Amino acid sequence: VQLQASGGGLVRTGQSLRLSCAASGSRLRIDTMGWYRQAPAKERELVAIISRDGNTNYADSVQGRFTISSDQARNTVYLQMNSLKPEDTAVYYCNTKAISYLWDDSPVAGNYWGQGTLVTVSS
Image (tube, one colour):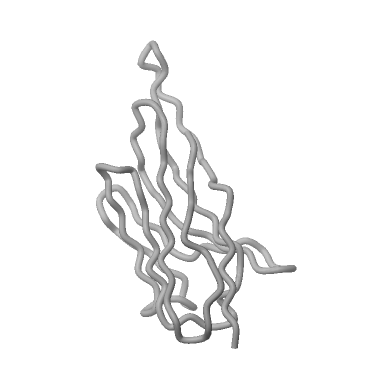
């Protein structure tokens, strides 16, 4: 399973960015897709997550500003980030918990990470 994230960049306070992440793999069943972030000298933290049935969960710090959505047909998750603040500056990582199937139909459950995309918000 591979995750390809895009959409990071440099913006000013109050502006918006949209991150995208596409999962690829053979016979993939995705249970959750989400975004985490890691700022310099800090632990990686959950930003937002969406489940297969559409339930979402957000970090308190982004509630009301960020919106996570998904396109299940394309195995793609999006993160719309509005009203960005300097404290949102971090490397954002896409994550998925998914099941893929081997040639003999054996299921393999995994927790997969994308390569990270840098979001920088200037004051």
